[in-house]
Image 1 (tube, rainbow, N blue to C red):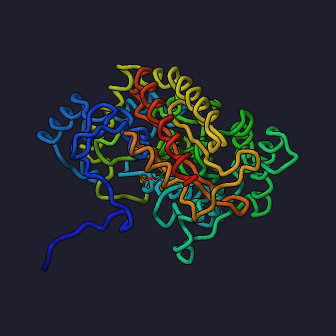
Image 2 (cartoon, rainbow, N blue to C red):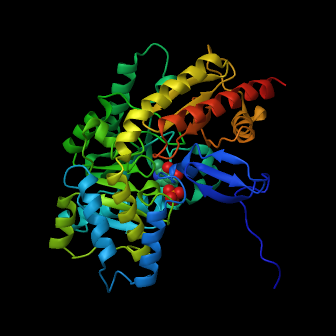
Image 3 (cartoon, rainbow, N blue to C red):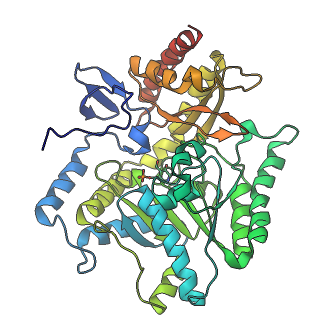
Length: 447
Ligand SMILES: Cc1ncc(COP(=O)(O)O)c(C=O)c1O
């Protein structure tokens, strides 16, 4: 027996104590306000302290706080799936709830495998996954196996299942001599090459983020990429899984990231903004043909977690989606996202250290470099991302760190992704604080 202690994310960091949060602001002990410029981890999409969501959750808590999905249905999940079905593309009308993004990715992978077993029998050889470098799919063993963020998985490598990785459409660091169009086409065609290499009969699914989150830094593909990926998957009977854990539910100015290219995946994995941080949740949204195969076959998804479809999570999803619809939140992101993007580009133009600005809606990244012409990063010793974040904190602004290893270099990225409710005036305030932060960063890094 002894005094309980937290295991913090890092024993090397000394985080401030958050005591209150309201709207787009978080407050520390001294009463200083910080703009939540990354919605926590692109989670708090509706900002903090939304009373009607809290009230809905309290009512749910008082009425039915838990009922196990193996024995009960409940109103909260019925309401949540109805609202999800109105947002998901095509016939991805079936939803399986989980408690977070990693569970969503694991569930999507298992669902894909079960589909082929139901359809073709247990002798189906389809089991190999293809994903991409500079991507993140969660902290569990399955998610890390398909994740391409080498610095996050290195320690655990011996535990992971090897899976094929393709390049992401990282245009800022594309090979010399290629146009964006040529590079983008090559990234898509690499999928066909890899499927043929592994044997189409062995390939289960291609899994990728429509717009890469923190591991690459808001990497947006060209307009041909996702439609071509869909074509290739169809040609070889490979399922397309979109990891929309970050991009889902309005983050990029459309309901889902794939909607920018009108591509319909077979399964979407999502979480984060789905309940906007009011409670842990996630889910997979699945095409009817997959569920039909299960219905006609074994009769149930061979999977389950204790908190799958729990009433509180489902209530939070229903409440968040009602709020998004009623207040036209996705439209706000679509319009004001352009204002945010233009403002970030203006800051980058003035700074000798911001080499690239990219993103969509309210999901943007700034890539920090030592030299804009050569695109050379600072190198690990300079701790550029940590210094940029510290400067932001000093100026009352929170950003999200990111980066990956590509062509032998470690990139420095910060994500700017405010709550989707952020107004145009608040965007201006955020830009002022960010501008001051990068000016301070310039002084700090030069010191
Ligand atoms: C694209 C993507 N997939 C999966 C995950 C894992 O989600 P969670 O941290 O909720 O398990 C994340 C988390 O950041 C993510 O960004």
